[in-house]
Length: 183
Image 1: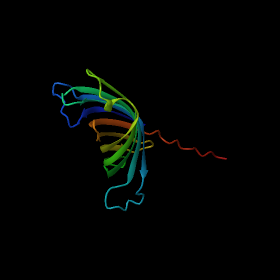
Image 2: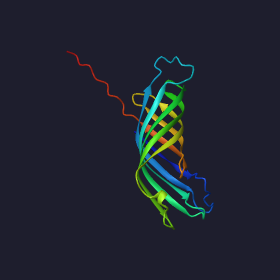
Image 3: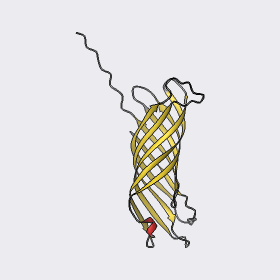
């Protein structure tokens, strides 16, 4: 399980007035799993795992919606599946540093726009697919259960693009060891 919180800044090509606040909170929760793909550690690079994530979350951002510099706040709820390829460096026997790049594919479940003008049809609500690019840095703490703490930058390229910076915390439930009974 992982919890992520952060800030979003809209980056669409039309400029948003500097007088208008442009940083909005974002948050999500989800599950992650590491898939060991280099069990023999024979690669030239420190590549051992693929990290898969399934996230449910909320994003908002302020965007310029026309040439008159009128703006709208667009809020979305989403489900996202991400795959990250981390390079791993062991710091100790129980802590590893990971730097990764990846991509995500998501489904926006609801979109709401609020503005002082009537929103244009291009930002009306509805379901849509979206793609994202992800840069990730985190520490993996290995024990009976794993823990992770990290930060990430995520960019969604679209007509209403944004960049998200966030920190996240995650953990996995320790596996129970079966006791062998004497007979």
